[in-house]
Length: 88
Image (cartoon, rainbow, N blue to C red; front, side, top):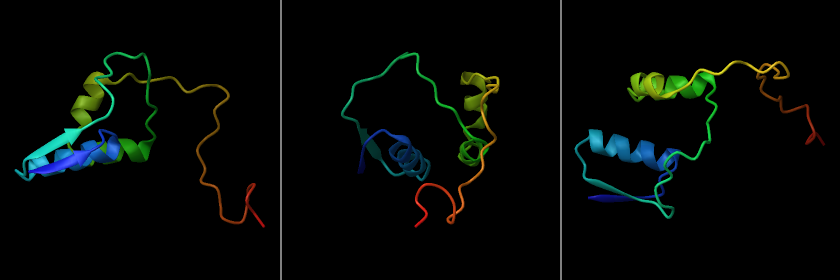
């Protein structure tokens, strides 16, 4: 089998795809089970599309909570290469 070190997003997606390909996989994570920590993850539309591509959309809808947009949030706009604080 294959050992995946780290249960972050990349490690878990890798393990999921290996499992779906019938390849035995073990995931190692330094931290213990997190349980209900009260933390949340905000998913942008492209992240939701990736989860849908992984056939995880039903689980996301079942477990997720739709949030309301904050009044002070600005729409996401990618920073162009020629603007922003790192322009030389």
